[in-house]
Every structure is written in C-alpha cells, then in structure tokens.
Length: 355
Image (cartoon, rainbow, N blue to C red):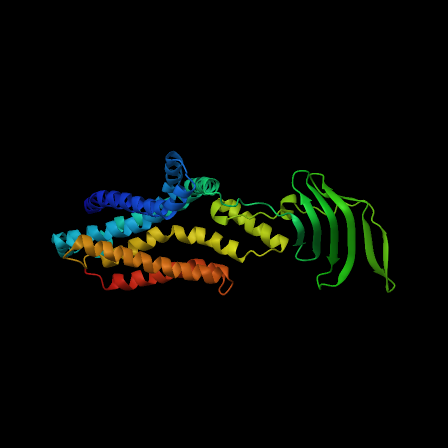
C-alpha cells in the first residue's frame, strides 16, 4: 500500500538518527563510568577504544527499543502537526490500519533483536568483559571444584566429592549415597577415586555400606557401570548466563537442576533473554498509542515521552527480575510481567488515540 511505504520512508531516517544518537550516548556512559580506572591503571588509548568497540553491539541492543519508540512517536506527531493524519482519517482509513507498517517493523525488530543478541551481542560482550577485567586488574572467574555435593536422578543418588580434577576427569574422595523415592537410606558407597571412561565412572577399590538384618555391614563393591552422570555436572563454574547463547543457557539451567544447585537466578535470566526481545514490539504499540498527541514542540515532547516510558519500563523490569532472582516470585513471572503490563497499557492508550 502506498501509505504503508510512505510511513516507512518517513520513519526510517528518523530511526537511523535516533539509534545512532542513543548508541553513542550509551557507549559514552560506559566509557566515562570506567575512565578514571582506565587512567589509574594507565590503560593504552588503543585498548580503551577496543573495549568500547566491543561494547557497541550491546549499546545497540539497549538503544534499539528506545530509538524505535522515539522515531515512531516523532513521525506520527510530525504527520499530525502537518495535518496529514487528519487527511488520512478523513479518507476513512482507521488509525490502527495506517500504523500497521510500524507494527510490522516492531515485530521484525523483536525477532532481529533476539538473534542479534544471541549471535553478536553475547560473544562481543564476553570479550569486552574479559578485556575490562584484564586491563583493570579485576579478579578473573575461577573454578572451585572442591567439596562438591550434587543430587542426581531426582535426588535418589547424592554424590559427595572432595575434589574434581577437570583435566584428568578424576573424582577424588568419592562418597555416593543411594536412597529410595521416599528418601529412605539404601546404601553408601565410598571410593578413593573414580575415573571417567567416556561412558561411566570407574570406581577404584569401592566399598559399600548396607543394612542387613539390622546391622550396617561393609563389603567390597563389584565392578559396576551404573554411575553415568556427565563430568561437567561436577564442575563449579562461575558462569554468567548473560554470556551464554540461548541454547547453552538452557542446558546450564538443566545442569544446575540435575546437580541440585541453586538455579532460580539462572532460570530468571534465561527467561529474560526471550522477554527482552519483545520490547521492540511493545514500544511500537506504545508509540502508536502516543502518536498524534503532540502538536507543539514535537521533537522535545517525543524525546521526553520516549525516555520516560523507557525509564518506567526498565525500572519495573529491574524490580520484577530482582524479585524473581531472589525467589519471591516465579522466574517466568519476573521476566514476562513487565511485558504483558505494558502491552495492556499500550492497548488502553490505543483505544483513546485520535482516529
């Protein structure tokens, strides 16, 4: 439709300027936030620029929804100020139909945002964080593979390991408690070490403790291939879900659950990966609902409205995610509550929009 193409042409240059402005602003905020530490540690200028360069994709990810909101609100406000919207309304075209091209742009931006974050933002942000830690002499993440306790098979097997050698894939000081589905004790297996064969853990000189006729008896355990928990289950990594691809983040959450380790925060961050991608679609609905409300000072009012809505959304999202990570609300609710709330707000505003 001609009007769809016309609206897209009016929107595109404003969006390009807006996203460039917000990306530059966010990059400068990150730069100046660390500038004093860069100077204190005498980080070379080239390395500072390199760190800033790797932060640009993340800045673009944050700037995309705000730029879409500003560009759409400004475009519609400008059309109304020039009485072009009045002409369109007089022709009998509903406001929602006229703005359908913007809704489509918002939907496509949400899909693009998810894959862009997963394929570009994740690896570049990881490099940026590693460079920052190196040049600012911050403590690197390390593995702590000692004194490990994990649950497996729905809690029916509990492993206690003194130390796990990740290089040799050897468990040292192994104790395995087996219990029935009701949690009743069945046996205790102890072994000085266990080696991963590629399919199962081979226990060295294991002994088993079992109750027999009311007495706790000990005897050597015959060779067994029953213990097949993957080696990575015994690794304690300080893994940041934000630095993992979506598929790897989902597997990480499953590993934490299988090992009986705290997983609520990781699960909340995993759901947030998907909910954050919908922000571009949400802001388009909000911008359409605000379209035509400003006839004077359109640039300033559109900018203020965009920033205000963005601040309210991100504050609500921050609070809901914090509550989800602390376990006060389910992770799924914490990630998606702001999304559905603002969709409802946009729908209500759209009902009162000029048409």
